[in-house]
Length: 255
Image 1: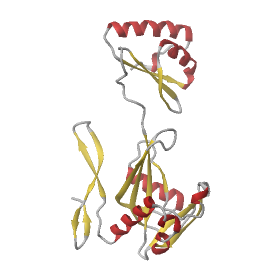
Image 2: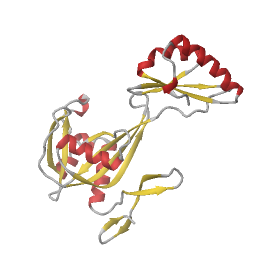
Image 3: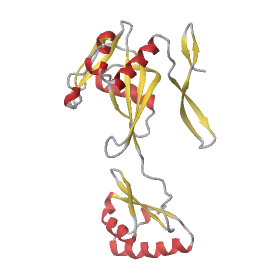
Image 4: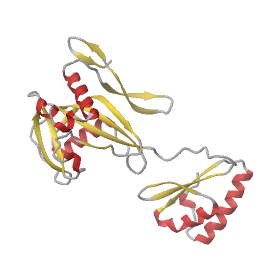
């Protein structure tokens, strides 16, 4: 891993230093090299590419390049392969579902009332992301209950795969305040009206997700609860999602 703070700013100086470094790494038996070039040193990118480095990924403030020294295919890990999205299924004591209509959607989804959805932020927990998305789009405060299902699809956007987690949330407020940037309308809709929308009834994926959510409400299904647990493998606190124990009197409970 090359220290970006020690990189020269002059492309000619960088070219000589990089060429000598590659030779040194080969002699030392190094295999993979990670070269992080900050935005302010982006003019060094062509120099690195000429030396044999390849693009790996880019962020707002840098581009990461890699160089695999031995012959044969690179064993360095690929760039992140998935987007992670969440949807919040929020239902109140009157059997009303919190639904939205988006301002920007494909023509075939025009007029569909759907659950609030969005992408997880960097370093954000799935259960917290679902609560945040619902709050941002509708102004409703919620409490995470469990993940009821997740969907995986491939080659969705930018040739990335997509993981979408459907979360059951408990409402803590009732007054809706719509996000004017993304959402056209939001409201509390009776569950049977939501389920009977033609676009949901005609789509096997949508229909199955709603069936699972209804089964959870009727205590016929246990989703994935979350617990914060420490692991010695990486020395970090992690979120573990797991099935609760089915109690036929009180429903699902995590242990």
